[in-house]
Length: 178
Image 1 (cartoon, helix red, strand yellow):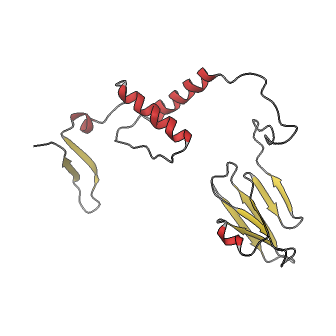
Image 2 (tube, rainbow, N blue to C red; image 1 turned 120 degrees about the vertical axis):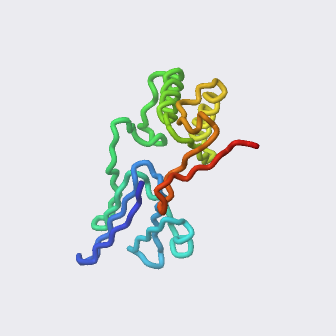
Image 3 (tube, one colour; image 1 turned 45 degrees about the vertical axis):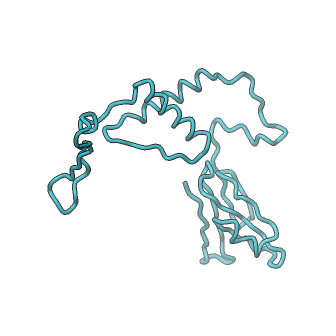
């Protein structure tokens, strides 16, 4: 995940190259100002451009901008990409989605990542994907298939945490209720 802007002042005129990761995880905005024609602005936060720019766009994921010819080019061309969904030549699905295959693939992916010898948690963003994964994890717990556990956790009497950097002995705490 990345977005960056490079300025090469060794060239005359200086050259700017900007790019954003293929999925668009990080934010990058591009703006233009009528008070400074020919100038291009970039920022990771929209509020940085609002005061100065008349036109602002979200820099498209998987693209690179080159100021030499003011071009915006898609550099990431995955085999599954069929174009923008809003364009008139966008492909139309020729067959229905295989919902059983999607469910089985999701379950296999969750199961694979649950293999752990230490306790773990799920960080929820509130989005659909994290909610589906957390829900699948909860369903596995209710079914009694919570995955492998470490001996210390299975015993539920003592837990061993990573070593204290100033000591040669592991840090141990008990969770027994007295």
